[in-house]
Image (tube, rainbow, N blue to C red; front, side, top):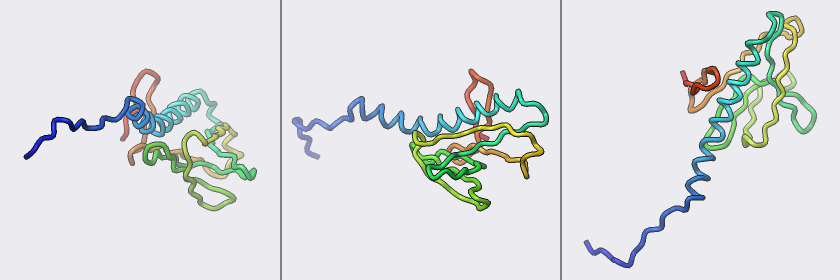
Amino acid sequence: MNFDPSYIPRMPSMQEILADELAAYSAREFVRGIASSLELAKRGLPPDRECVLEIALENGEIMQVSRISAEGTSVLRIEGILAGDACLMLCHHSALKLLCSFPSKTKTTQKPKIGFYVDGKEVVPSPPNQKDQPR
């Protein structure tokens, strides 16, 4: 094998390396952060209240969220109900605007269970200062 001593392989710049790391970190950490925040909020709820997570769409409609998953490096997959029908939304994590409300259980028709997933595994929220563990 011939080796060309003048050949210098191109190394990725630090900016490229950090951009890749941050992109992979962002969607996953966003989902873990939302899961932990909602878990902390639910701990202080009175027994007659429940947590409902919603997205206000640009057209004014409200989507009730049942599942948020990190897909790839920065895309979120959001499943839920819109106008009574099941729906699926894909968006960049930086474009997502969530509303969390705590209505009384008598005002909602069914108790919503909100799931959070990273790498296909459900995120189990942990107290602050501990790393979230997928299950």
